[in-house]
Length: 111
Length: 116
Image 1 (cartoon, each protein chain N blue to C red):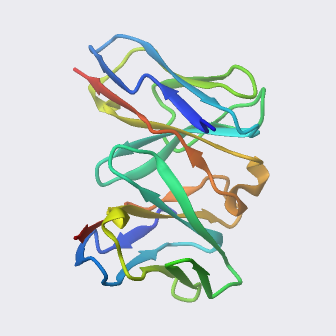
Image 2: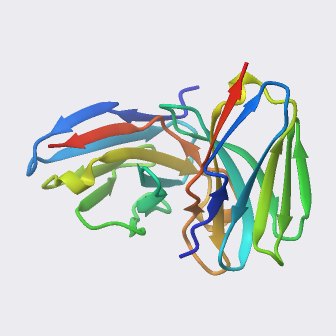
């Protein structure tokens, strides 16, 4: 399966700290996307990193991609209580026609 | 701007009953998708519609049917509900299917379905 796995499954930090979550996948990919899901809501797209990029920034988000290790990380700096959510990586395998989602990291930011 | 709207938000069914989940998007997107989300499983694709008039099976299509009613609307039907179909169902849309990996998908807030 192409499905990615996020690590850790759950993470709890204090407001103001940085949060890092990781995603590993199994096969070659074109690009990788990160999504956020607030409790009881749908997924919201955060950032897309292409397979030829190693790092990408968007506001307080920093995403890295290591295609040799088949892994990506999402760093949220200076976390806020509003960042409390589940975070998912999603990939499309080269030649595939489905977007596969990982199982998610549940982030809790304590005010 | 509503984005992707799903109805109903909650539903309880008895085993063997049928129902249709509705989804509509107002972003003029060509492609639409149905996923189910189960604890510890992530999202799994049930069916998708790359463009108006076409539908294709995803990863877990058994027990479901879909209809792409027009460009805006994509419905999911459970003909004979089973307890294994208890899940949260999400509809999503994107601009162009062939750019699947290069485009974000936009999600509705889900339908929480319980089958007793």
